[in-house]
Image 1 (cartoon, rainbow, N blue to C red):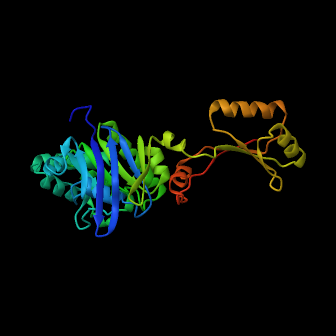
Image 2 (image 1 turned 30 degrees about the vertical axis):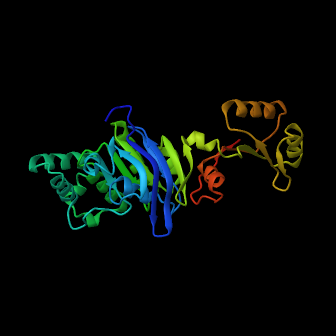
Image 3 (image 1 turned 180 degrees about the vertical axis):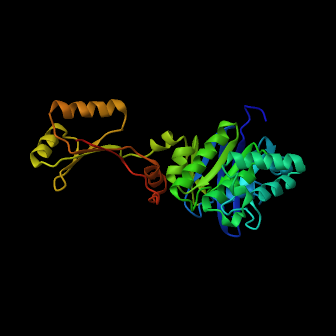
Length: 322
């Protein structure tokens, strides 16, 4: 694939089931060697996009290219270039981890010696060497997802589709998966992942597309999307009413909560703006008990572009003065 050719190029993707329109004119452009996240709630159409681009189901309309190949005229070439890790594990619980990988190697016609070498390499890479001798049914959820991803890599794909790769995992296993995904991309692999987790998209993705009811409602880098949402501010909490009253005079643009002794000062969270605010606080010798910075995050973006609250909120960054 030419370096100037996108790994995935989608224009006008449409899909319906009967009278139900699932995807309504989706456009996507995913650069090689990047992570692209499709973010949206259940039922938004994310899995349908993955199923179409991985040749599992057909589109009703659209000009679709994956790894430089036309999806409709050359699906075999597309399949040779991709790997897919679905929402539900493809691991066979009655086989060991090693046997699962060797089975995938056989499906890729790697040959006995090469298949065993590839299995050993992937067990080492995913920290499953000891577990590789045990039945997969005994694995934890995080271990199964790591094995699932390892099985996807047996054929050395250039493009990987990860459909909600960390759903159901505990925080430690989720962070382990994030690190594995980053390492994959550092080797030149392209990843398109779907997720309901705002933090996951923010942590991993070079670009994000927000999908809602089958339509793309926003697309860009995490920072570009955050600029779509208003509401950046600094929250100042005081313990003394006289300090609160003085601060309200020094910062007249702040919204006041007299009962809680809290001021909410509009602020974009930039270093320059924060430095200016802190200088004003210091010049007035204000005793601030707690300072909290809130910059617009992907929760705010989701609400701004869909009108619906997100369910996976992230916390503010908090600084408490001593």
